Image (cartoon, rainbow, N blue to C red; front, side, top):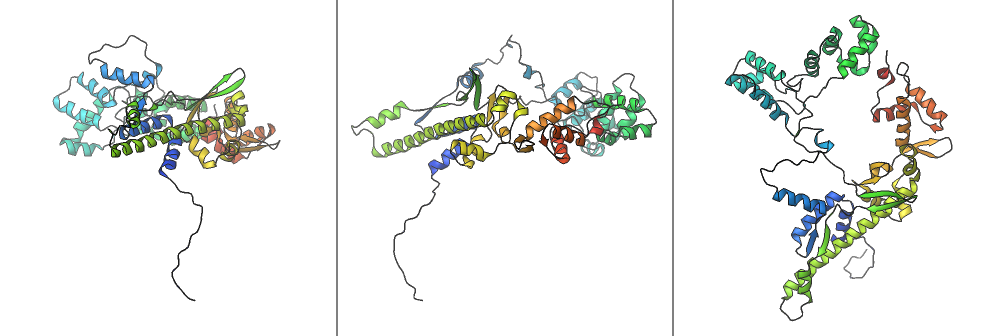
Length: 443
């Protein structure tokens, strides 16, 4: 076989991932909040781009800049979400209470150190010996300081275990039956597993007395420090809004939550000058930045169109859900929507990633509509979420003294035409946070 060099031409097709295509893919998978941050970062690097902030964001920033330091509180009523959690940290709340007590300097220092050692739920994460070694004091002094911390509000802070936390809270309640303390000390695992009969047999009390004691324990807060945080409430901004107008569903892409992109008039005027006052290097730089801005505008419009078409396809394929609620949800795959819109499945996946839709039925993540399911007796599909809704409805209506077992729920669903196994019922029940029939049983 003779070897040698040669030169020839060959025509082939290749998919090249250009920077513009990569940017279009990136913009498509952004949510509204992520897109706003991306546009602001691009505007910093591209002088040709000008951003017009949404009214709510511009007003918020202007208020933050011009608000006087000693401004009085507004007289408008506070929204509900502002009172759900305290904007004061647990450590600040406890230290403020310590300042009101008559403590020596040493006691205050030890108690403050213990407060600083609590986790976000109010539990003490350090051992007594460890605190004693760090603070160079006796273990008895640490124990005394810990008792001071445990006397503060909320009741249960400073506990070293779940049983101690519940014990401290039970002590604050008047006329607590003795079995409550015995269950807290020795039978919390049995409470979690619903072994009411076993607890009653060990303690020698009736099932009714055991049930009342367990109910009281479950009314206590296992994480007393969780309501004190400096974190503000998180809100979901819908990327798409679906409204019912004259019997039809209208899709509105929520552009109001993202900044509007404009081309600077100043640089556009510079390009129009033909008198040679603008150097060629400057002109080339402006042209490149202008092309980049125009491509970003095109990518944003493509994102809007894709999101609009995908949402329309979802409405068309899940019309029963929009009319009747979760119980009418059907199984849906990416391929179903991709074929309806005429795009690739990966494009649908990017279009729905991290995005929410506001519907007459509530606010849902777009991925919520893509769900597997089970087969009905008619050969059609029933989405997992609709089956979960039926299971929850059955459990809500059951007799608490004779709760429905997974097998019984399976038989009832089969009577309704839904073919499902007992294991699948147990899986769906656990996913929606419903305990087993043994744990639901009342005496």
